[in-house]
Image (cartoon, rainbow, N blue to C red):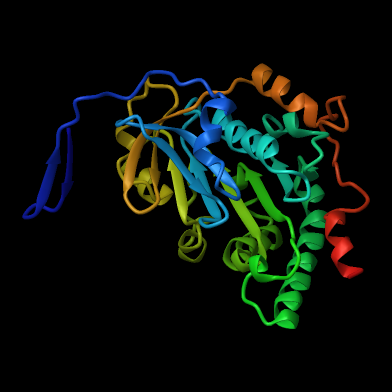
Length: 301
């Protein structure tokens, strides 16, 4: 039963179905649903059995939050693995920041990945290069008299910046400001942002940044205050025993069961897309010599 609305004007919805307790991720099962999308996100099912999905090319910023064990790591694996399998490196470039040193190392050596950073000091070089690329793309839009990279006479790849556990760099104000710039200015330039954190931070998620996070997903939150900061009202009511149970806010808030993808299955799926097989050392910064090098082809036109 769901009750929505105000004290004087409300609706009651009675569901005859319940969410599944577990949904294993299978790319082949979702491919027919996402095949017309440019940058597809398909992350689970709602109470009606409908896929929870959207095109990240249209809704280009995402906040993921929730307590430990809520399923954030699996959700991130699902999103990134789908992109690696669906998009070619000419269509998508990834800048990954794993400040927990826990999850995104699985994507080391993937041909789509331009940078994989584990510490704040590792982030400055790729972020500076990406900001320069944004300025270059802005100049291209002016030169060709268009307002979005999709309207250029040539293709530029989408670039997605993923920052896992952003709260760790809270005091690195220069990096926080650049991330805010990616989120606020990246849409027309094909630069997209995913921010993940365990406990939503009201100082980090200020009104300016929250206004630019168009999709918000939350696992269970400790209380209503945290749920409000996360931008997903009711997230504190999620059953703590239901692993992978989440709520998503796009227009309205919807509860869903997220697909589950464990590390070993993810590794196996990613293996065909690896150019380097050995796992990175924990302190390693991975920045190829020619970050966003695919774009340099356009400069020669």
